[in-house]
Image 1 (cartoon, rainbow, N blue to C red):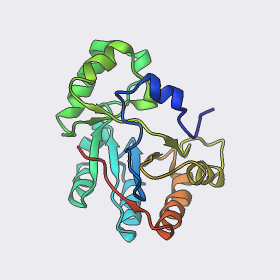
Image 2 (cartoon, one colour):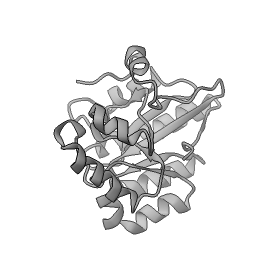
Image 3 (cartoon, one colour):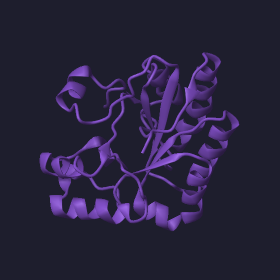
Image 4 (cartoon, rainbow, N blue to C red):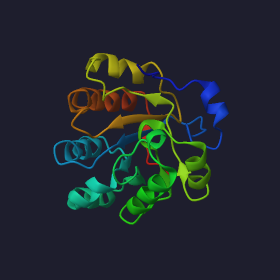
Length: 204
């Protein structure tokens, strides 16, 4: 179970996180977690390119090392990258020292001040440290593409019903999300491009 639109109460409780980008312009910030992987990420890049869209990829360090050519392609095509830990750790289930060392390990590969915690989960101690070194980026629209229990149409509806100017939309370039991703990404790009939106990367 997840909430497609991040409630204002949660955003107000964690004001130092970046949930969306304040703007009245027609712009969306598409973000992709968990890659890069050869089965999905190149297709995402091709699809973005066909619309002249830029995005932000929160990379798992281990994947960036394994698939370094794809990681370099993300950068060469003008997209932004962010740190998503080296091994996709759950902050609530990981000792703070172990977690922060894992973030540092990823930072040696993914050179960015942007950080998104896997599952959106950090302890207060982890958060206090990371806020001094990174811009912690969350989201205000969650597609739910990773959930095998929901249909591609529902994932698409989650975005179309909730995204607005400045929204940070969370998707995944992962095997778990592939079925839904291949349906929703072209549809999102087509729909919002038709409404005069552009798609930008987040500033590092």
